Structure formats: structure tokens, C-alpha cells
Amino acid sequence: MWGFIGMKQKTAHRTNQTGAGVGDIWTWVAIDPETKLVPTFAVGDRSQYMANCFIEDLAARLSHRVQISSDALKAYHSAIERAFGSEVDYGSIIKTYGHTELAEQCRYSPPEVIKTERIPVQGNPQIDLISTGHVEKQNHTLRMHCRRLSRLTNAFSKKLENFKAAVALHYGYYNFVKVHKTIRCTPAMEAGVANSAWTVQDLVGMADA
Image (cartoon, rainbow, N blue to C red; front, side, top):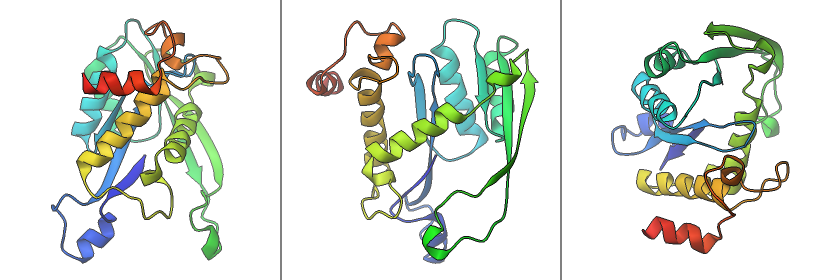
């Protein structure tokens, strides 16, 4: 998911401030659609290196073979093969968007999806389960919970360290404190990595530890 530190990348280029710790930033997110748990996330650029780091960390946190879905970003293909080898079922979903003219006040509205294609990439993925809908919903949740990622905001992060801390706090709260309406407990409880819901005080205490 896209965000920015200090200013957007095009502004940094225009003002010759590239390399000054400002510009576009990306949050990489993995989610389990059954337990709603976010097992890992990463903050960085949109490079092959970041894809490798993100997927390697995901693979290290899983105890059995899984099916993975991603969008059409090519960096995922080699990253998943590198981290999982042959022990994964992986499919990619490719969305084709229309180029409709939007009114100025609607410039942040998503374009219309005119075609969706599900493609098996590795192993034997179940075609009807290839979907990025769950992680797209989680991206929306992050934007709603983390003010610095809201659209048209003046609350953007001025430092990368602050941005990373805010995203980490969100996922700590989401996994361990927030009770999910669908599963009626926290994602960590549903996944078996916590026995009970944490309080915010518990979460802060763990961060201090």
C-alpha cells in the first residue's frame, strides 16, 4: 500500500530533495483470510529486494504448506520461489482497469475494473481461491486506523521511523487487541498464538519490553 514521508516522490524530485529521507513509501502486508491474522508486514520501497525480505519473513512464520495470492507485481514471483521453493501453491490475480474520465472532486476514486484474470503461477493453487480481496480490505482498515495514511491529510509522517512505528502499532493492536466481528475474538486468538485478548496496556507493555 502506497504512502509517503514528508512529501510525495514527484514533489521531492521537483524540489531536488530525493535521497533526503522523503518521498514515496510502501507497506507490504500478508493476511490469513481464515483467522484474519496479519503474520507479517514490511515498510520500504517497491523493489525486488524488499519483496524478497517480506516473503522470506512470511515463509519463516508459517508451519505448513499454504496457498498464496498476490497481485500482478512481478517481484512476487521470484521472491516466492526463492523463499518457499516447491512447498507452496501460488496464484496471481490480474485486474484490467478502465480509463474513464473522473470529475476533479472524484480524483481519488478507484477506476472501474473491466476484467479480472486468475492465473496459477506455482504448485497447484485452487483457482477460485486466488483473490486479493482480503488484503485490500485490510489496506482500507489500515488507512482508517492510521491517520497518516488517510487520503488528503496533513497528518503525514515527517520521518520514516515515525511511519514504521505507527504501522507496527496498528498491526499489534489489530492482531492482539481488536476483536474481529466475524470470528468474535482477536486474530491472534483465532490463530492460536494468544490465549486471550490483550488490552492496550498489555500491548504497550510488550512494546516497552
